[in-house]
Image 1 (spheres, rainbow, N blue to C red):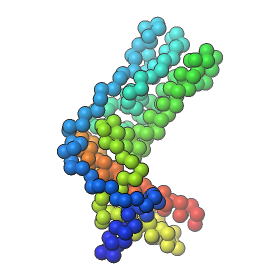
Image 2 (spheres, rainbow, N blue to C red; image 1 turned 90 degrees about the horizontal axis):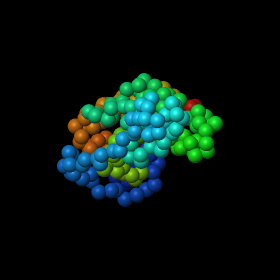
Image 3 (cartoon, rainbow, N blue to C red; image 1 turned 180 degrees about the vertical axis):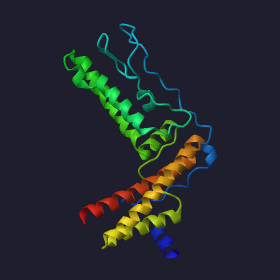
Length: 243
């Protein structure tokens, strides 16, 4: 294990994700930097009634099927609000069947095909709105982009070169990567994949608790770990597909 730790330090902790070699960033700032004192700016709200005919809109998407007018969405409307999901008390906890239903409902209203016979400006708005709905759905559907999105909304940025600071964890990641690279037996890779999936599940559970407590510094560290674990998941799946 000691030799693994040394090799992890020498290789700058980048084997798992195949990221470019970079100098290790400074250690994560103290928890109190992000804990409770970073308040996201208040988001604008999507209109609840049509600005033209004043009839209630069928959902959070600003498109009226009564008078057939569609409107641009305020830039800061959150993904949760756009898809009619609760942000509080825990934005990381998303019910996937509800998310998928809200996505289908939203797209049925704003999809460009529904506005094909309208004037060109309305179709352009529908295309932009449909793309935004799709982006919100894809972001909230999977734990990693969901965690990154919530952190960004709370002033905590994760860059592509951010790396885990836990050397024991990085040694495990390197060992898993080398197991995949040197594997000859599919059962060996399947066992590693199953173990890695357990780690992913545990990290997702950890993130649920951290976001509930608004501990964004620790949530950032857990999100970075999740990024590495998903990298191992993809590598193992790719190996199995090719063998």
